[in-house]
Length: 163
Image (cartoon, rainbow, N blue to C red):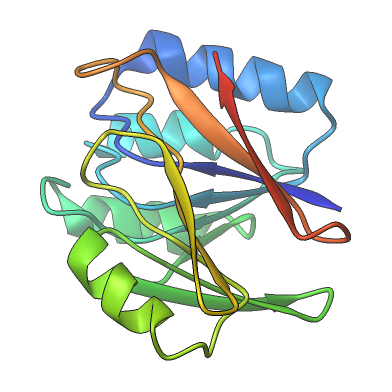
């Protein structure tokens, strides 16, 4: 099983649509979003594929959180975790949040197999103890080419892909 991880969309609708097309081609059924979606418009697009589950948290620039929460309550495939998300899938303990400093501190506890974060717009993979710490980069294309991560749970391997 593979999960797609994104962050920092910042309402770049064109790149978001390219991302969704790519993960449909890859037959991905779950997405983790590490915040800075932007607005309810982007969340509506992100959640438009009803057979793909979307786990998301808020970042520091997300606007109209009430409207985004309403989207999460309206669609069964969208799950809001506020500012910190935690999942256990196929025996892997996963955390996701927006803030890189908190993510790094959390990784030092060795409580998770993998922690995903955003905010810096720069893709990065590192290992702290037993924990993989990963920033998937950005969809927004502000600081670099748009990227996302693909997490293979069986192999416990992360690949950063460019749109």
